Length: 258
Ligand code: ADP
Image (tube, rainbow, N blue to C red; front, top):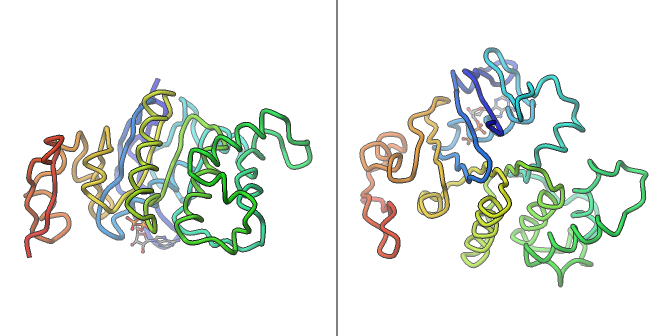
């Protein structure tokens, strides 16, 4: 069964329809990257998976169930989100923030079990945060906060992980580490990963499937080789680019032509 099925969905906000006639099947064990210029609808598509937008047409199915028939708790047990923008508001520690990822499993009042502690510790280690675990989130860098949000999503232990621009604000080491971790989790544990990226070259290196959005429609979908062509990228991004073979992997390597 497809983990996620988006069937002819048109959706958006009260005054504005953003996505038009989107159809997409997302399978387990794959990393799907949403690409597209600013405002093309990437975040709106992620929101549609969580039933957070107004769907005018079509349906979104999670493991065969219509998402608009599921409670928020049921959705939280199936999908985890690392959002693009969430400010660290309260002086909680990094560890306490990551522990919030367990709340959809144990409720707010049930005590933490040994298993929860182990899952939180693993998420902290996987994101390189173990040494910062007792630091207040109001006293960490933007990159460390971004990794905290990813750790919280990992601690939710869902079958689907959605990440909105997970590499924004991270230095090169953590961009590569986080995307490698996510790809390994997808391939080794059959996790379904949907993420938005701006960096076409990171997408080319890490995606199993790319969906290129343009003005609320799917301009192309497929592997990096299939989607990332000179003509298409120059057209969708309205910027002339050259696509060369990556010197190490032969995957598409995109450079702007100035
Ligand atoms: P992307 O993630 O590709 O940058 P978005 O999905 O954030 O694009 O936005 C797509 C379009 O939807 C944009 O035109 C944006 O202005 C509009 N939009 C985004 N969020 C809202 C909102 N909450 N209410 C109304 N319009 C919105």
